[in-house]
Amino acid sequence: MKVSQEFGSYDAKGHWHPGYPSEFAPLFQWPIRPLKTLKWLLQWGGYLYPSNLMYVALGLITVLWFQPSLAEAKNLEFGWIGYMLLRNFILLWVFYGGLHLIFYTLKLFGNKQKYHPSFHQEKNKKFLFHNQVYDNVFRSNVFSLPLWTFWEVMYWWAAANGLVPTVTFEQNPVWFVSLFFLIPLWRAVHFYCIHRLIHWGPLMRHVHSVHHKNPNPGPWTGLSMHPLEGFLYLSVVAIHFFVPSSPWHFFFHSQHVAIGPAAGHLGFEGPMLKGTMIIGDYYHYLHHKFVSCNFGLNTIPMDKWWGRYFDGIGEYRTKPKP
Image (cartoon, rainbow, N blue to C red; front, side):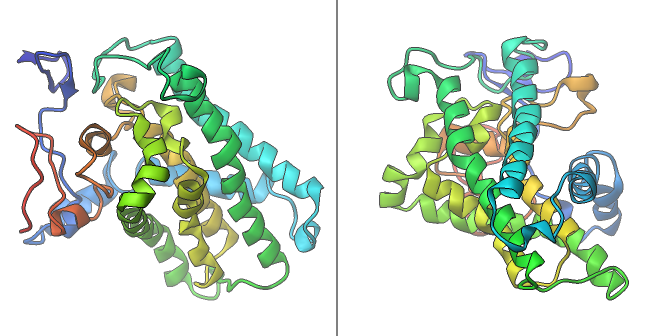
């Protein structure tokens, strides 16, 4: 094995792996280790910083400056809906297009800490236009972008007409703050359940197989889905139609689930800024590579509980139930 200058190693075929097992959050490890859990919550690269905090900030910026007024949204009209679609289109290209530009077009980091030794496929008939990137970009923009905007439009229209339960910091400060911690956990549970569902035979063959055309994913793979999968995946935000929250919570949640897959499918283990920029998701890459493991996120150990967990070390096999 060839040892990387940073960390991790390459196998004989040029596949890179981090060199340590892909583990779950200490919050769900037994016995409970309070100090390790606190560090996971508060230190850089943990639960709060930088990823979740970035989406909290982006959600607030959206609500304050880049969202139509509730008065405008009382009726479903093209003007304000089109504005939201355009805003999300810009966000899509900033995050997905930006990462693709850095890692795949300009190749600023070469193959450094890239899980798969190859880049994207061209002249392959399994993809639209016979090109992996064109296929992924098309599906993300034509199918997933409108579905992302659909859920946001429905929420904003419902909020404008008093049809969703709301809460303010003044009304319930504990619940208001707690929601920012709970939303990513709910996303993990929802994602696992939906993901296991679409791996069921008929749905796998006719729906989820679209996403699994990409065993070597890139940023645009994140939202490259069949429309039914996109609808189900993004439906995680439907909880805000029933559970008291605020627009800030909703847009934090919506943008977390819509933008997060760009970094999660990056295909690299975050070599930016000497590794201090936390991007890449080896846990999910293993799912793309082997298909039958790691259906969830590495926050809650649902794969471990149901015997579908592979930590990336040694020969592939799912780990048995504890």
